[in-house]
Amino acid sequence: MINHQFVVSPEWLFTHLNDSQVVIIDCRFSLADPQLGQNQYQTSHIPGAYYLDLNQDLSSPVAEHGGRHPLPNPNDLADKLAKIGVIYQKTLVVAYDDSRLAFASRLWWLLRYLGHEQVAVLDGGFAGWQKAGYPITDVIPAPKMGTFTPQLNEEKVVDYTYVKNFKDSPDVVLVDSRDGDRYRGEREPTDKIAGHIPGAVNYPWQAVTDASGFLLPQSEQRQRWEKIEPTKEILVYCGSGVTACVNLLSLELAGISTAKLYAGSWSDWISY
Image (cartoon, rainbow, N blue to C red; front, side):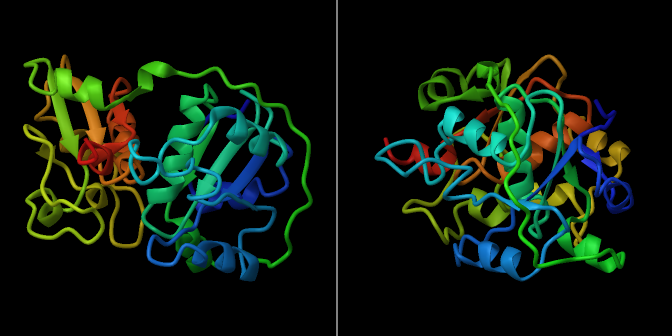
């Protein structure tokens, strides 16, 4: 097993491109153009990387409740991971995107939810990799056989009922990860209703990285959350449970590992 702290640098990944214990997953995606990520991957990607799609692989079909990106069926995702060579609790999975870790963090969170701790995001994403002058390719790697039997960490996730029942508790902090104007209800590009869950505080997910998609230093991640008392239970949401995972990564980097994802998020909340 490889020692890592949820994040690898482009330099580290370059030196481990041929490591049989590492599986690289391209998570690029565009909410505005759902085919874009797959097309970008087929044109150029990090050598050896496989592709997982937010809608097809990292979510399950949309229903009446559950939000716009319901969590995928754990066994289906486990099966897909096994088919690209991931061995449960052994392989280090490195996830990357070009959206300031939005989709890579979703996969990072999902793997840990499935009980697989060996997962990191690529700092700086695909753009950081290219800027460093490292190789890209259009060669699609052949499937490999791994083994993946998930053991769900149910305590990592909460649903509508839990949020409704506990959001006003003095021991709970509800974190809205969307941009400030969406939190305040001034703009809502995606969901039918604008605003936020009553009582939520706003920590926009894009503040976790710089404009180039590199994570801010660990000291700044710690500073970011210092207003929240360590004894509080932290519940994190966004529009559909995707970008909230960037805040969950930030919390982990800050040394707070007990925060939970409200997976359905705002799009689920307004469905009731």
